[in-house]
Image (tube, rainbow, N blue to C red; front, side, top):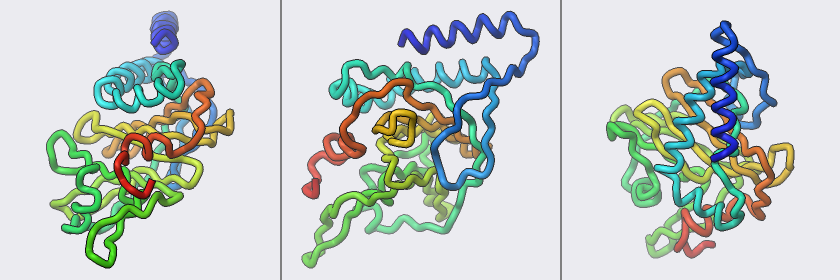
Length: 239
């Protein structure tokens, strides 16, 4: 955590020396969703500090298996190297959706309920293909090249798309910060290294803002789907 700690301390010093409350920074352009309509590349230093503290703490509490998986692959992996890139303003797409018995049988065990239990985070139903065979049993057929993250509201019978990714990015895991904020982690190749590397998104469902954090170093991960196949979907016969 040395890099994130040093980063936070530096921001605190800069904030104390500057009387302007909204000192803008201009990070590199992000690589993320196809439903983004406006990008804001300016953030208050204090805001970035708070976001960094919350995310790092919550990752270690909620996604420890994800962290340990990549530490096993590369001992240099440190979530403190996830650096804020930009905040994007999006128009989240909402459509009609009813959670059927079949859907629950296929994907129910991977749905993540919100703290108030009113909505669920769906990370895999678009990406993971599960179909019935001739005997009526569910069988895994593999992974789609595209991924989608959505929030399902069973009582309202709606689904809201948060992220949609093409073949160059894989959605791996996520959790709820609170009833209106989610954190998603994945691996993407659209970066300065042109190689699989961690990405994190923090999404506010009320403001429809997406904060993106990119990994500062090349982790040298061999494939985009190793976490899903080796850990998240471990035991499925299609891999």
